[in-house]
Every structure is written in C-alpha cells, then in structure tokens.
Amino acid sequence: MRLYKLISIHLLWLSIVATPWQAIAQEKDSAFVIPADTVLPGQKHPFTESQRLEGNNKRYLKRAVIPSAMLVGAGILTMHDRGPISSWDVNDARDKVLPDFATRADDFLMLAPLVGLYGFNIVSSQNRHELSRQTLLLASAGALTSAMVWPTKKLTDVERPNGEPFAFPSGHTAYAFTIATFMDKEFRHKSPWVSVASYSIAGATGVLRVLNDAHWMADVLAGAGVGILSVNTVYWIHAKLTHGGGLNTAVIPVMLPNGSPGVGMYISF
Image 1 (cartoon, one colour):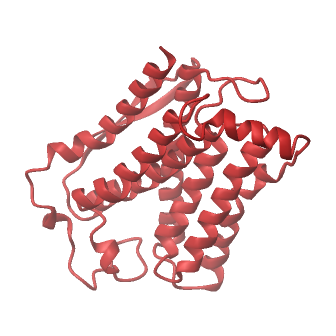
Image 2 (image 1 turned 90 degrees about the vertical axis):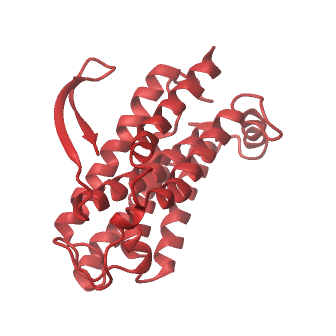
C-alpha cells in the first residue's frame, strides 16, 4: 500500500508538469524560440542557443521531466530491500564501514553555491540575469521544491535509518540540487566548471545524508530528481511568460497538509 501511495504521488507530480505540455503539444514549439541577440527585461546578455530553446516543450520533457522521473523512479524501486542494490544494502555497508560517522557539514554544504552566486554578481558581469531576477527565480524554484517535498514526506511517512520520521524524499538533497541546477542555468555559459562544482557539492550533500544515518539512498535519489525538476520547471514557465507564451495565472489561498495557511498558483496556457 505504501509503495502504491509513493507511485501515485509521483505520478501526480509528473501529471502537474506534463499536463500543460500536453495541452499545447499541437502548437509549434518554434513559437517559443526567440531570435538571436534578444535581451529581455531582467536579462544581462543575449541568449545562448540553449537558452533560446528553454521554452521548447519537447526539450523540457527530454531534459527535465524524463531525467527527474528516472531519479525518482530509481528511488522508489530501491526502497527498503528492493533492487539489485537496495537502500538497506547501502545502509548496512555504512554501518559496517563508518558506524560512528557524524557531521553537520551537510546542513551547510548545500548552501555553498549561493556564496558563489552572489560573489559572481559582485565581481563578474557574465551572469545570465540581473540579481533581482535571479533571486525571484531561485525563490520560485525553492518554493516549488518545498511544495513537492514536504507534503510527500507527510503522506508517505517513511521512517529514517535513525528511527526519526518523514524520510522520503530527502529535503537537504532536494534543496542542494535545486541550488546546483540553478547555478547551472545561470553560469553554465560562463564556465562548465561552475556546473561541475555545484553538482558535486549537491551530490556530496546527498552522500553525507546517507553517511549521517539521516536518510536512505532512495530518499536521496528522489530528492535529487525533485530539485532538478523544480528549477527546470520554473525556467520553462519563465520562458513562456517572457517569450510571449500567453500564460494566465492566479494566486489563491490554500491550506497546507500540516494545517498551516499558504498560497497556491494556478497556471493555464
């Protein structure tokens, strides 16, 4: 029953991001491919070839939805004792090799790329968007990550290796990959090493969560998928908004699963 619940939740995630894509599948993606040398409000430089295609629906499905679904699926399929290398296998190896491992580094490591983000804005003019637009995009991606992570934790209620509740998916890993994917989007054109460093830090955060006995491998895999999907979804929607895609939006009050008030956004196009 719990596996069924997990699969249902993640199919819901994918339906949320895939439904708009299906709704406009009959439209030409070229409508969202902007001319070269275009500089939109909030953007500091003309689009690279990759950035010009960011609103392309097939590209979004191929480069964001499918890879993220594979990571989340790998997490589900390796939960407990399932899979050729299960989460329990990895945890047993951890207990044998590093039974007393403990560090707080994972609480701070995931934020390290943010230092680079604002540092680049100070010393370099090569960042993709202006600082205010960067902050808005990052905050939106973080909010989307939270909207997927925390309700899922409550609904699945998977016990952590250390006995605490709400393991699946890993929030630390999800936010780490949110930040890493954001850095990749903003600075890949400047240097691919920014992307390599950011994703390495995100991966290290996930590994430390397992070594700290705070998460199963499955939690980390799913968290990585959530973070990657969140940022790509925000940039995809941003491309639709700024490239004339005709988005209609509405912000409505909602009640979160823990009973706290919140806000939700309805988007149609």
